[in-house]
Image (cartoon, each protein chain N blue to C red):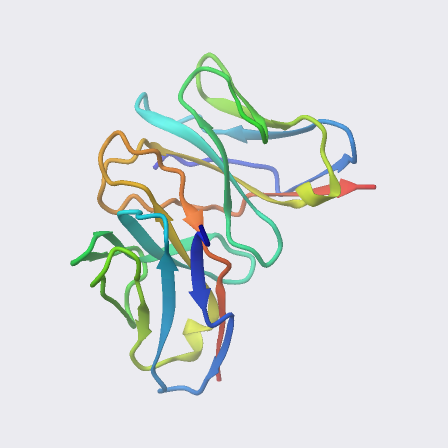
Length: 113
Length: 116
């Protein structure tokens, strides 16, 4: 799996957009960008994934640069419940086998009231 | 659907004891896996299964056994607990194992294990 680099922590005011960056300069052409988050003492939760086009769902938007070497996860209106560790992961779309997700240390996002 | 369930939520063992962590899912998912998470660290894959009767090792399999006799259940056995196995254990599942399957994994709430 390609290596990702994320800031250790970030703060964001409640109600504002939270923009979480991720660098993945060694990403391969067949690798997707996935985002998961882990709220304290809970299991990780899937947020979104994409290949090269920007993606949006009910939770967030994913912006991938044209060269695919970096991406940004956007939480449009952050709430206190969005305080969590956010993991950026790059890997091929599942093909079976040991395709466990490789979690780094992620970004600890703290939403301030 | 209950999703992915794990029991127990907390467990304390003495060194050398054995136990089984239970994991079940009611979504008819083919793929199931076990991870451990140590303080301040990401998750590491212990064992996984691509279907009933099929299991394989992940990144850190030593000291753990698994079996998959049904689609729904994927228990993790600690044969002889050691303090190094103190961790939070997460079970996960996802729909399929083919190249078209989404990699959206669903995680259980975790089991917090302490080995004294």
